[in-house]
Length: 503
Image (cartoon, rainbow, N blue to C red; front, side, top):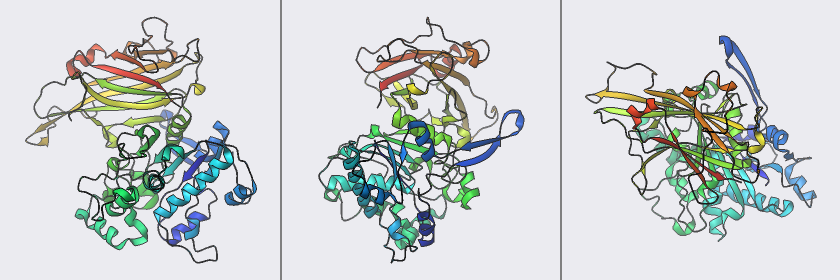
């Protein structure tokens, strides 16, 4: 399908004028940066940009030739594997010699529909994939939740998948001012920033027939894409990339992380950066800048696998039973690494303010089983690396405990960053003889591997995981945890892998 990029908030007229000078609205911007690498020496890393990488990796066409509108007006057909920029800010710029129009999010969403209809007609594709940064994700949701349903149409007839980078799905809130800053923003609407407040969000995310003139109900959640509405877009076709690095945004933009809070990407709080029920990944990147989400390898690898992968894999911690200790909080940390990549594609750790809380009530099943999601990722069999021709993934799992005394954290017996359980599940995918069949999976814990992981080659015996689910099209297997986990998670705790076809 064609891919349409939708950029984020540009601010005032000066910001809009700067944004429109870029022919690709910033999605062509790569990054170079230095972090500490091997031997404690600075390590240089270069990322070309998501626009160029899709062109190089997936063969997508970048078609401009004097302007997108001109190209579309002068060509009867276009290739479906093409990339387009929704240039919704152009009419609000003051640099074209005509009076600028006031930016309105609903207008941007309506114009996006017009672009999609043109791309569908000229490409013959059933729809487009939408890839959005920040406010651009809200433009896309306005299209999906309001504009198209108000026409009596199904948004799935226009949009294949939606991928958002750092979108404030729940709005933008601040950790200071006791709500005064938010109220001032929403009342004055300065530079149109009230689009990040609940009143405006309610109206552009709710179909006309369901909008209450008195405003959002008290229980209304801006993040939600309700699945029970007419023409509801499938949550399984939405992916939210969540940034967890506020510091680099402060360096790039001068906004103190103390304003938004440390549990953020510097602008959008972690809890507001996702749609409940949608796919998500956490990466240690800031909202924008040199270490931003869009121009990062972490963001691109999640985007590529979501758009073009052929299998979805869910990893869950199930049937665990924590020790009954008063005033103890249990947390899980997870990291997902992929062989051949120099980055971690998903990480939720306490140092980045986003561990998984095990002390909260876990999701229950009909048979009373406890279940906490750890990782939800996508595999692309065309990206296999290594001599075995398999895809190798490493799921790093750590369990930590925090102790309280009189409501305060107690450090009497505390060892900082020391986990009660720490191991890595090494999973190899592929290697089967039948390419049409469900892939062969093999798994083992790093604690049982002798020597470096890079030297490990799974055999076809005990490490092969069988399908425990008789249903067609869904593969399930429960993996026992090492014996060292039993005193913490119980003897029945398992990692459940679920693999389903994706496309």
